[in-house]
Length: 137
Image (cartoon, rainbow, N blue to C red; front, top):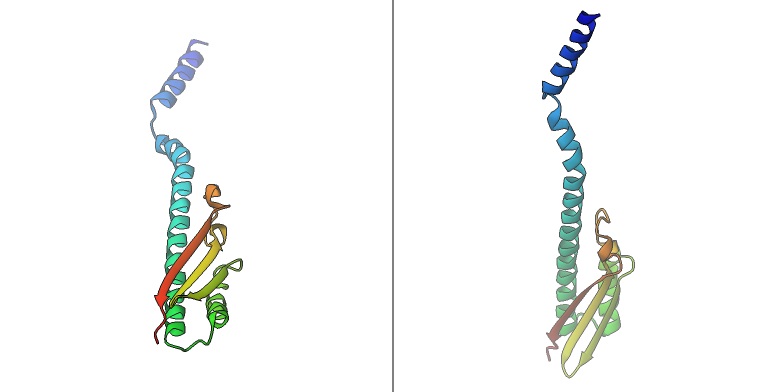
């Protein structure tokens, strides 16, 4: 009987002193946090990248309208929406000419620009691109 008790204590003692697998427990605790932070970073980067792409489209459209390639604001809006809608189906564009200045505003829901959707606080936010260009005579 004494040998069994000693053997059980010996096994339990070895188990308590054995540190193999201790990193696994820590990794299981930190891994989800790391993944969430990486997804949030990816979402933020995607929003900024797509905003930059839309800004370039609006610059090109405003320039084309300024030099006479587009006849009116409606043509400019249609051109912009044709290039922006694949990225953001809910995008809207408004272009106007007042006092020789072309102003174009593109508004997109931020949730349509995200890769993973891990930023719920941005779900109701909108991304807006506003650019102006002088109309050339």
